[in-house]
Image (cartoon, rainbow, N blue to C red; front, side):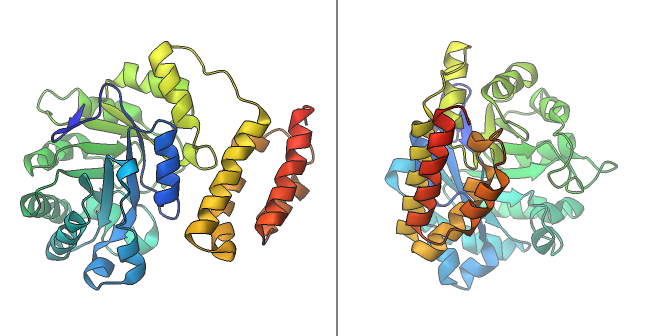
Amino acid sequence: MKIGTIDLGERPVMLAPMEDVTDITFRLMCKRFGADMVYTEFVSADALVRHVNRTREKLTVNEAERPVAIQLYGREAATVVEAARLCEAARPDVIDLNFGCPVRKVAGKGAGAGLLRNLPLMLDIARETAKAVHLPVTVKTRLGWDAGDRPIVELAERLQDCGIAALSIHGRTRAQMYAGEADWRLIGEVKNNPHMHIPVIGNGDITSAEKCAECFDRYGVDGVMIGRASIGRPWIFREVKHFLATAGPLPAESPAWYLDVLKRQVLQSVERLDERRGILHIRRHLAATPLFKGIPDFKPTRVALLRAETVGQLFDLLDRLHERLAVGN
């Protein structure tokens, strides 16, 4: 699969863009575990052109994470174009346009998935951005606004005509948010449309290596994105790549191995921010990790993990968990 001249090989697996998750340290970790391409947190075009420091910091790209895409969202073509030019100066490999974020503060203001209610504006933003920069411009969107409005098959063709280099589709509508099951049948319909010539990347409910392989085989997509299943589990890319290569599961590591990964995430988060903010940032990963699933009477420990305020407190709790995991809970 190629995005422009970027060759991602056969059946690439990508880290989906997620706000407050896909910062540079997490992207680098997922890359080391096998992610073929990574995406930044989404970047507000409005904030970027106003030179908001916190937003500009999201443009930082590390050579070790390539290929990497900076994802933009906005609701005015001129602003998105200006922001895309600023992104291009940061030297990513791809600029991705977010037409799929469902949260109210984005979609409710006409950006992200809100553009599914204004397709002419969505197409104008895609067309003008693709013309304005020299990097490949891609799009990530959803099936449609709600169950009665799912125009993705026709919309995909129209976006392709705007000059985008690839299309990623989350298999839900905006109304679904993240509830219910992702509908991969429509993603497959887009991919199998003979008028589509750009890569089609599927996203939604990829929680295991087996599910990833099934989506490649059943729906014929060019690539797959993994999002929420990577939170607290960056090693999922290692598992998926092994399964795709061998058709067999990767043998499990020791509990100490997985806990060491989480500890590294803690330390990297603290190093990037500071102890207080770094721990606040990493709590989402600790809360989501499947590593502690099934441990009896885990709730008090989970609460303690989420209330810990220092690296020492966190590591002490993780070491105690290692003892429980080592003896089978």
